[in-house]
Length: 112
Length: 115
Image (cartoon, rainbow over all chains, first blue to last red; front, top):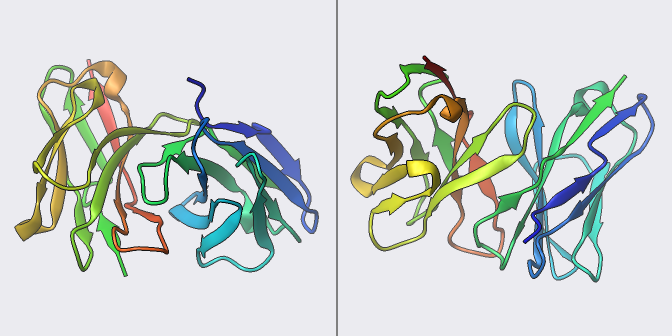
């Protein structure tokens, strides 16, 4: 069974640009979660999508947004990039809301 | 608000020695508890989980953890460490209550294994 996949693996952007990160959940999983792992800040919850709807949001500014598509894949968009957005962005999926989460390999975003 | 404390930032053990990684949580009700492992530059792999029932849970790679409600702890153990266990370990608590589900992670414990 294929795990959670994320693309791209690495992304380099300039301050002020927009970044789009993609995630495909495990087949059959309907919930997708996004986390940011920044140096010195640890793993922080960003967003939770379930059945196409945003269910919960962490303490991040509105320039972090996303969506979930009908096939349950998801996209994270970060607008007006700042240097401190440089981090590993991890996507996870679960079979149902509240179930154990399985993580993808992450997208390393570097903002210069 | 839920929170997780992993008191040990870095632990070094010899190969073959036993291991215990500490985790304390703060949560108002019975939490969902997890341990994940992360190798450098990689995503997180789920080692084990506790939702309810037996307080001693078995996971993959020979790991186990014990939920102690009175101590608000969920420590991870392994009787004999292998060099391949060197990685960073994260304890996490999930909100069992409800609709705003998310995982809250500890800061992690980096495990070094000496030959």
